[in-house]
Length: 169
Image (cartoon, rainbow, N blue to C red; front, side, top):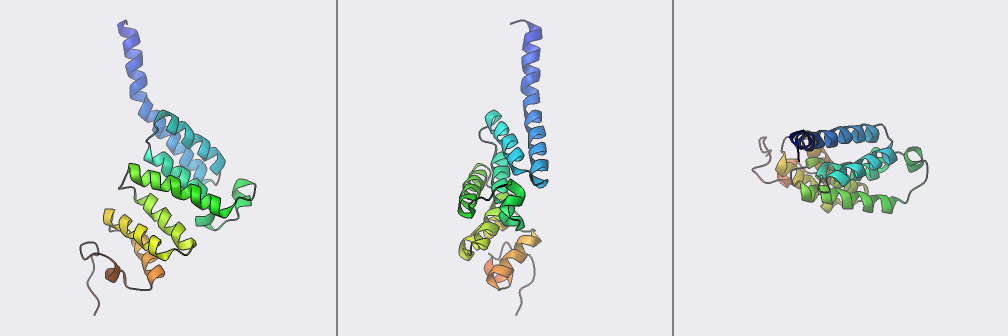
């Protein structure tokens, strides 16, 4: 192999992560623009390049949970009615995969927690939010979600090492 060919191959390898980042950014933009079908295709293209990319699994899970988390009829987002249970199952499977690949990915735990809260599985929701707070205890929105679900002050729910305020009497 001549030096020019080797340099070209090296350049392609170095640009690969940037390509993935660009695709992930575009997919996130599509998801936030409420175009989940387009975003799913982009996330799938990331997984073709990097089958263990936790952000692609997270994005796909968020696409499937979009109408549930934002409380928008599925027909408005997907142009068809989708089965809610199928959406939850797809979202949970993908979010679990994201959390498994990156145990510090709080967005995956938070999305699962919010989905569990929507389907009235409060114990599972509390577990997901607690796992998220163990990674990042400064998430005020998650603390509020926990308080809303349980009706208890958050410091009573968490390990002493996680909560950073003063105990109430």
